Length: 291
Image 1 (cartoon, rainbow, N blue to C red):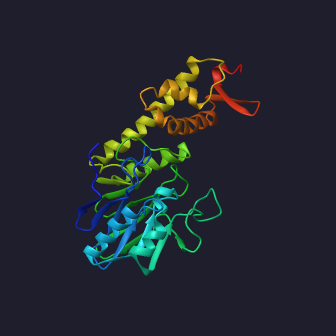
Image 2: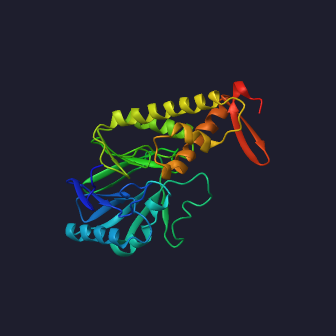
Image 3: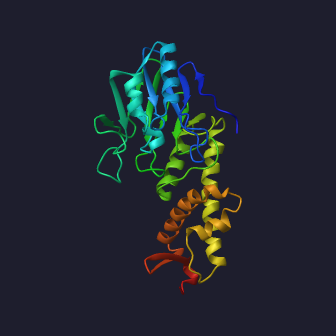
């Protein structure tokens, strides 16, 4: 995995600022992107809560560019993307900076993770936002979360948020929606992807097709596991221990999260059978449902 510097100029109008919040789930940290060439700039995502090192890097870039933030676009509600918004607004933005995010469908609040005193404007699918030197189009891509978006440009750049990562594969809340979003991005045919975690994706179509193929392979492996263990009371972690043997154990909980959503999809499709015993739900293959 190539090391990502704290600050990288990617193009004449795009600067990547690393969120300085490394972890097993965020990789080297959350990539945020500063867009534009003029006095006012767009920032995509704001990193995690209370990371002064990130704020210092962002503030330093803006001072060097003799610019300030007029627009913040949040790809989705997860803390490592919205957590820094309060400090960013306090240190790096002008008074009229607008914060945008697509609405969630799993809560009545637009984004309860953001302090109530910060006004968040709702984004719409296919909405366009522009400043000097940059224009982006919003594409709603649910699955990772209900509010997840990616951003595209006229010259083929795609900011993928957590839908597609620079290394590894993404987690998701709803697999059916996530697969639909991957196909939607494939139809866009981006020429390069700037992800929220990991390095730049230089061969985006290959990466997207790999993601789709990988999920289908995982589904086949999970179904095969249930068929090999007929009439046993099985749960997601049982699948992980068998199917994810090559995955570091510290990531098994994330793998189990994905497996649960694969299982839910298979149950809806009638390929697995679910039964609750003493408030615990177990699953077996539909062809071996004598549980």
